[in-house]
Length: 113
Length: 108
Image (cartoon, rainbow over all chains, first blue to last red; front, side, top):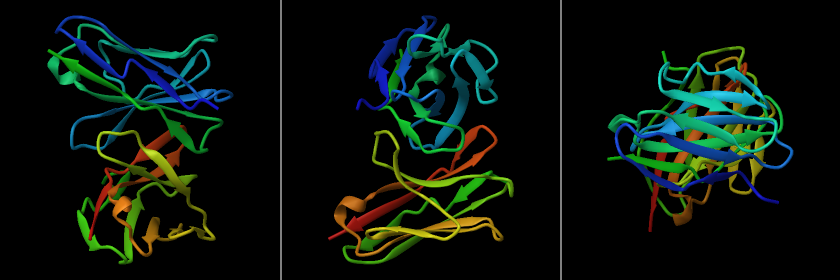
């Protein structure tokens, strides 16, 4: 059984470019969470999605950030016009149902130069 | 007040020691509780769920006290490989809310 798959593992972008982070949940899981982690800091909730729906995006910056989880294919976290402060590890987790255990992917480490 | 609070540590303990971590949460309507472990620069991994009746998995015991709104993790007979950051996780409505973690360093 494949776990949560995130790609790319490492992503380098110049300031002003777009970053696309992909997350394929565990097979059968329809709940996806995205978190951001800065060095030496804790995990910060960004967004919670179910298939084709954004349920809670209260942790997402209002501008430049968007997320989707289409009917087919992986969940995508998109960051437009990246800035140095966007450099972080972005983790995706999936769960079978609300309030059940979530399993994490290995993360995407975004570096903005 | 933070939604989930943990002592950041670090807890430095010798091999074989018993160590306990606590975590408090602010919302009494929180529904589910978990402990995760995160090694440096890696993804969090589920350690165990936490139930009101308490649960044990080998050297690890977790307890939940709903009245006082805290959960605990006890590690017996610490191993070098237990060195990591332990994350307390609480669910409330649709969010998994993470504490900032407690660092454990086990030394020989």
